[in-house]
Length: 184
Image (cartoon, rainbow, N blue to C red):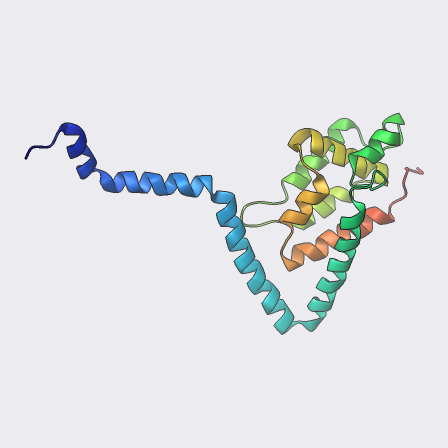
């Protein structure tokens, strides 16, 4: 029995086709795969921290409490993580940041997480450049404009390791401790 050229080609190169299919599936499901590894290694990190350092467990519990309180308030128009706060008053000059600076800080926050490693410390450094809650809200607006997503929701999603949760709580505490307007 003779094979046509197409069938002979497939029989000869079937391994290549399987490799290509695997690569396409990995690319398509990359975020899910990376989240799976993050959860596995994040869970191992949490277990290691709780066994080796009881103080870190208390610190993590305090961070979770701080984050939970902000989770409930972040959707309010008065939250500094909401663009609505800036839109309601900051556009009248009650912010110290230019649009370009706010955009740069929003990009710094966005760039602080990756598929394998996230660094909430970079986001903390960005927020520490804000002098009032209106500045933070201005950054949140620029973040929405650039990435069509809520800055706080993204931080909550991507900063899921115990170390990053503690820094997220520091971000929340820092921002909530800022005055509403710049008092220069």
